[in-house]
Length: 556
Ligand code: F6P
Figure (cartoon, rainbow, N blue to C red):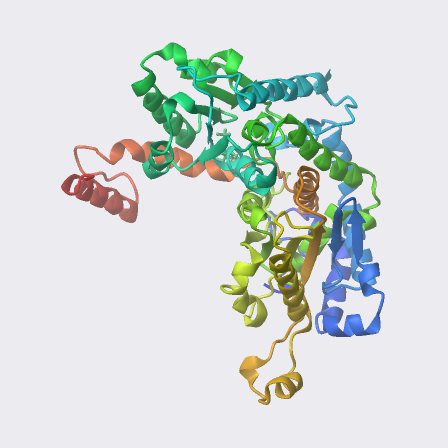
């Protein structure tokens, strides 16, 4: 796609959206003027470019100077944010207004980490007392488990926690559990089961003792097929040994917004940790969905995580748009997505503990902004959510970076780095950092034919690097609960700002529904006595192939 695809003339039936503002025409003209400019030239022309295009918030530094921008670019992009009323939408979100219009819900993950305790009103009620009560209950419960006071049915101490959940009820807690490894309880392991493939639950349980295992069934709706199937299996596995349903209460707790379904599953309401409909699944690690995090790192650390997110919330609420870290990241994303036609965005953590961050952000971003109908119900005629992907950067260097450096696509990337490592292996860390720096420099500068000749003795076109590939560098002082909270809130708000600019409801996810419906229709057909014929030819044939072959080759 090129910038000219962002037509200012709406398609029939397509409402003029925010990308039809006059500032967008100016941005298109500006893009045409700067598209041929190399970042090398921009750096050469301005020795203060780093100072100009970097920003520090607490222990987070954002260097965005290696982007294809000038001061004019940023001024125009900030105008776009102003015209899209980012500040107004932000205030409506923090104010508890029902900005998730298609579900008629407020969007208040920010209330979950509102450490100032200022009232947050939803439907005339301050939600903070309930939020704080749940955080307190989580802390008290986790402390009992961590200290060994909470015992299994046979009197043994809990050694393993199994979080059963999927999507936001899995990816967030799992990523944080991994990221905060240095802060974990030494004798309490947390396992995560998400996939309905029986291999996942079977393998996880094989290594566990029912008498020392605590299950946290995490599901906002408590109806998610994968989670309930795995939870039922875990319950049967537990009962096969414990032989008494009254023991379930010591080994199963639930996190949900659906009290009735939790009770119907057989979990004592006293063992339920509440969340609310104004917490979106992919924004829920701050809620009781974070129970497995609290069990792992303790209440104090969890509160530090919340406080980090709150610090970023405060920055997002109060900093002018031009010096607002989430806004800047969002605008740069819009710049490449809508004016350069970039289709994807890479997340490249240079940190082993952040290795699950790309998967977490895939859901956070793509489930939020992967939409083609705007919040007014009109089809959009501009690109919305980018494809988010990534992996630990250092491993990526030996895998997919070839395409970043010499491929034909423009792929903006975020490099995420911590200054102070958690191990004493400083030499390793220096190598890691040197590589991060080298990669961002190489992506920006490239290597001309002349330089290739000078450096390699050959004027080989295969060894030339065009450069001019944009990247952001986000440096955390160290991965701590606080900096991690800041980092995650930074991305949440980036996604929010982009959703506002694209005029989307970033907090629904209707796109996941159709597949779920079809799966429940297909499930009984897999073992139907007669061939199935109610679908298209491909789906019919595949169902019937599966019916025949699974009978012929039953599991061994
Ligand atoms: O199907 C998508 C989704 O609804 C996600 O948005 C959510 O995070 C996940 O499923 C899990 O949902 P629940 O917590 O209700 O089981």
